[in-house]
Length: 130
Image (cartoon, rainbow, N blue to C red; front, top):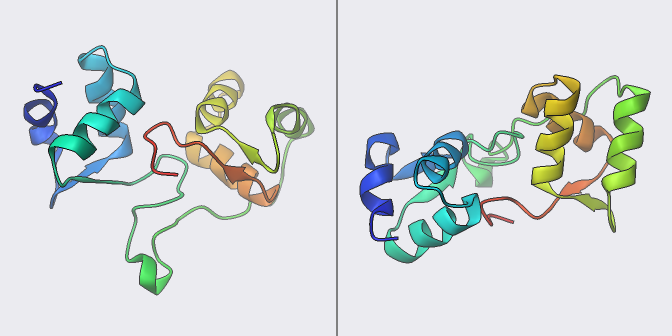
């Protein structure tokens, strides 16, 4: 895990690491996203940003600008059914949202918007941010 700080260095912007870059580095190092995130948290002061579902890291939270996710206007029935089947206690795992997005050819942010429209919480985050 000592190689993590070196591996993330090219991707850092103002001491922040984008979600997509964290996943890229985790794959390169043959780590799970969670393993990478724990190493980053334990060994650095780096913060994660730019969640691929639009849930955090896009601006100051205090100003209500950290999220870019918006409730989708239309939720296709087959996607709704799949999300509902995967939801537990008002939430759905980030990894499951990614799977559904991939299966249906949707961008991850698009699925984040659908989850938002369905009033579900995404939890847990693959990076452990929530």
